[in-house]
Image 1 (cartoon, helix red, strand yellow):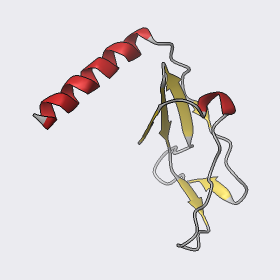
Image 2 (cartoon, rainbow, N blue to C red):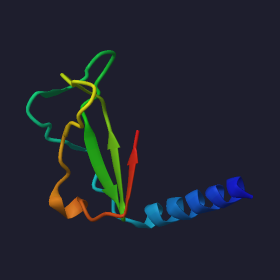
Image 3 (cartoon, rainbow, N blue to C red):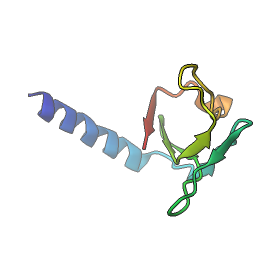
Image 4 (tube, helix red, strand yellow):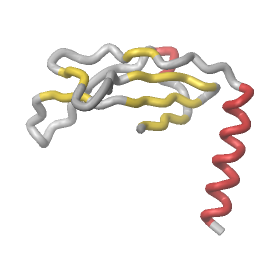
Length: 88
């Protein structure tokens, strides 16, 4: 039952996205000390908004101590109230 529910929810999201405006991919501005990971092709961190969904993609490199959280980029304010974010 859970699989069918998740499938149905994803299908509803896809239908809404088809009707929603797509911003296209926009490069994220990375924080100081963070760089785009660029091995094997472009991995520039980017985001786009489709309806109420924000998608983020890319890879980064930074000196991380392994313990403390690190901000790698900040989304524009107009996107920070968006209900759903999908990372890949």
